[in-house]
Image 1: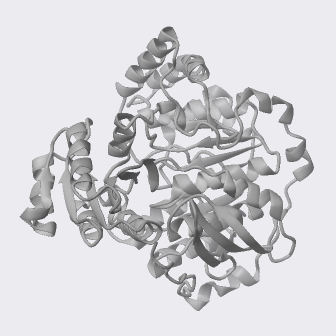
Image 2 (image 1 turned 45 degrees about the horizontal axis):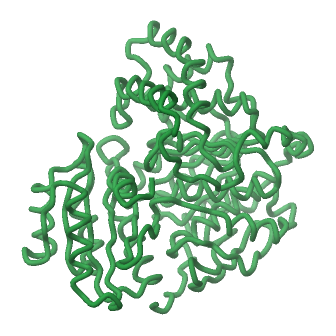
Image 3 (image 1 turned 90 degrees about the horizontal axis):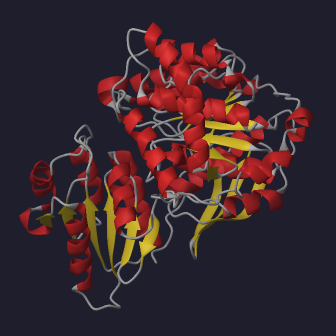
Length: 506
């Protein structure tokens, strides 16, 4: 393994105008007694925290048939990438459902990269303090049921189907009243909020689908808003600069909330801080109020010391690879501290044993996930240049591959060249392919860009993903069995999910 590179947690200061935010930070004082009383006796209805991360298809044929019918009905609606900048429809659905999203406090997460991993970490930490959680994330790796979780486990297929059937009449009612039907993502959001209220949960951890202001999830009034690193993605919908994208994402910051701000480009940070001033929100910034104090490679992950809002948390094992995951952990910890009211005016730390146990339990499927050995095959869902750079750094640090073969299948609306350029230094050869969705970039079109980045002699084209995996594994096996060649499958969450199934992890 290579030596870990030194941490960089000295985020650039934004304009001095905003320094008063930290100085005037106020302590949130939730009624924790009520939250902690909660409904812990219902914990038996869900699995253990971070249990079944990626569920298989239902074993019962009738249940599987019913789930496929629900999936087909949802697929008939607007897809996740077709948006109308309005929360009118989702607000109408919440109204007829009885405002289920107001039945519990929530932590809302936006950003470009790291949202799902951070959400999983927040969930694990809350579970460690015996709070019943609901988690809503997107997209899914393999099963649609992954998107709605209770206490760390995706809801059962039967419960997913039941939730859909329960909300369907209300969805149809709203459909009839609106110019456009509710979208795929809006219906799933409504289902998640309803399922959390029915559970009931003590706190919901909610990841935005895209952006913030107009995202369907943004009908909640979260006391904690988390902003993971912002970079260029979905530029046709969110803006062409980090500042423009931050303007859209800042919409999740509500009046009086606490904002947990990961390291950001300076212009994006300034936009977030301005928004916080406007709504009288408190801000904690990575690299200043909290951060990664130290990290070192460990077997199966890394050992980190995190500086939280209430003190330092030493010797935490995180079973995930890459510096970016350590920074996600710091953000998650600060978010949970903020939820419990810990900050400048309440200088106490959370129980270190509970923190260690929580982080040690975290899973993040499709994020530098090892799914096979001899040769080692790693999956990573990086789909933009910033994500690719983080994955490339992580795999270079944590694995000592003598030769790495890339299998890449992307969507056609991404910065494909930027992604390929981030991976070029670590791939000896690349096999370009495509996944099964209509959004997938044609393998030949992807190959044309790959040849420009890698050169013709390093690029192989296999339009079918199964053929691409076989070709990459064969290339890796051309070296001696013990030479340490590996394969990285990346470019899209869909590509990674389909590869995971093909490699027997579904």
